[in-house]
Amino acid sequence: MIVCPEGREEEVVTRLARVGYDNSVGFLKGSFLSWEKTGRKIDTIIQETAKELEEKNKKEINILDVRKSTEYNVEHIESAKNKPLNDLFNHYKEIDKEKKYHIHCAGGYRSVIYISILKSKGYKNLIDVIGGYAAIKRTNIPKTEIICSNTKN
Image 1 (cartoon, rainbow, N blue to C red):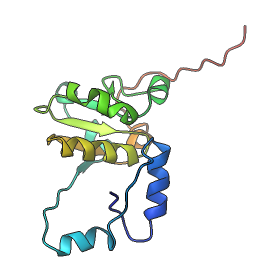
Image 2: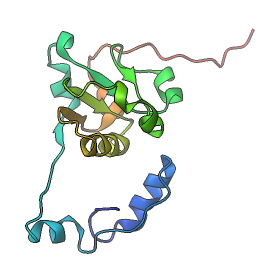
Image 3: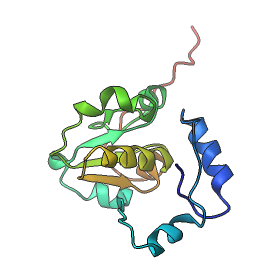
């Protein structure tokens, strides 16, 4: 079930299909506002900027990079663990429910989906990094060197 701003339903279906979710059953007519107006329970996702992540104590940070392993292998935050969205249902139980995690993808769409799924399974301490790795690249957070395999002998 999709909940998105009115008029963006097709875009959301397309974006979900690009990351492997192509069995959408419908959307909430009237967007999130219609749900909220009924007084039903709502939940939110905590977000932080890449700059805020940079300022945190690195020893206390658990970072999950939910991009595909091919993206992660090119370049990533040194301390990040790769837990791709497209493989979430095979590894989510490896994620400790008691720990806090900062979660990012390339630009921000997959991380929000990832967090939403984990929240539905009882996870609570999840923070989305706004702008994903594109924003992280502009910080001084330690990253691996870019690996280029296009060399000639």
